[in-house]
Image (cartoon, rainbow, N blue to C red; front, side, top):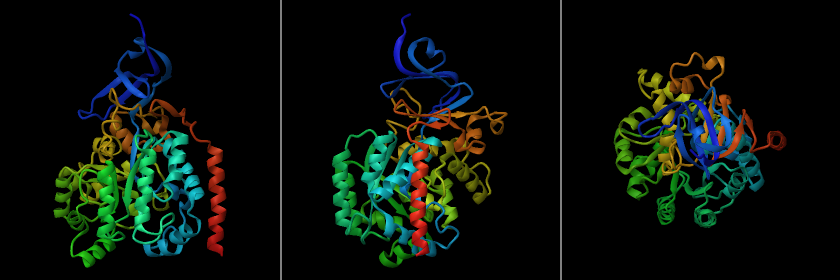
Length: 441
C-alpha cells in the first residue's frame, strides 16, 4: 500500500476528545493534518501517511479552546486598582488610565501579551471588544491566532471614535478590509443597552445583518444595568433589546448575569448565544449567572475570561473549572454543569456561539486543525480515570504542551514559538512604568 502525503501527523495520542455531536473518543490514535485541516483520525493512521510527525504520547487531544469574550489589550491593566468597588475601580483607575494611554501602540502591545498568554493556555480563537481593533488585527496576522474582533461602540466619545456613527463607519471599513480572512473575523460591538441608544443598537444590527457578522454586546451584567434600562425604557434589558429588534442567532450576549425566567425563554426562542465570564463576575462582585437554567432551556453558552483587569488571567482551563464548581455550589446540586458540559463551553458550544461550528470547535475531518495537546504525565493529573474530569477539575493552563492553529504549530513542548517571551515581558515592564507614573502624578 502506498503512503499518502500529509503535512503533519500527531501520533499515539492517549485520548482524543473530539467534542463532536456524539462526543466521539479515540484511544491511542493519530490525527492527520493537511492544508491546515484535519483529514483523518483513528488508530494506526501513521501507517497510511507520510509527513512530519509529533508524538501524542502521554497527551490528551482536545479542540483548540475558544474564549468567547475578552478585552485583550487590558493585560496592561492587570491588577490595577483591584479590590475596590466597581465605581471606584472604573472612575479612579481604569477610565483615567484608558483616557490617558489607549492608542494603537497600547492596544498592540497589550494584545501581544494577551496572545502569548492565551496560546500558552491553549486558546486558539478569541472574541474581542475594545478599541483600535486594527492593532489587534495586526498582532493576529503576525502570530496566526484566530480573533473575532469588534470595536466598542458607545453613545459618547471613545478612543478612536467621537460618535457612535463614526464607530459604526470605522467598523464597516474594518469589515471590508478583513472579509474572508481566516484569522481576523470582523464583528460589530455596541457596548450595552444602557450605553447605546435604541438608534445606535439598531444601526449596528443593520450592519451585522448586511455583512453577516456577529453582534457582540454586554447584556444584564450588573444590577445597576438592569435598573437603569428598566427606568429608561420600562423593560428589562432582554425585553428592551427584543423590542428594538437586535436579538437573533447572530447575537452574542456577554455576561447575562441577571436574566429573568421570561428573558431566558426569549434568549432560547431567538437563538441568542451567551458568553459566561464567571471569574470576572466574581471578582467584580457582579453576581452569578444562571447558566444551568439557560442550558436547560436550550441556550448555547460559551465561556469567556473578560479582560484581565477584572479576571486577572486568560487561562481558559481555569475558567471552565471555576464555572463547573461555581454552579454546583450556587445550586447545591453536584450534577449541574458536569465536566463534559464545561469542556463543551470552551470548544463546540463556543464555536456555535460564534457561528463558526462548521470550521472549529471539534476535532473532525474537514475542520481546521486547531488542536491542543495536554500533558498528562504530571502527578496532579494521575491516576487518570476520566479525561474530561481530569481536564476540568485537575488540569491548569500550564499543562498545555502543544497548540496547533490551522495545522501550524504555535506551542511545542510548552514553549510558545509564535510569540517571543522576552519581547512580551519588555512591553509589560514599559507600560507598567508609564501607568504607575499616572497614578503618582
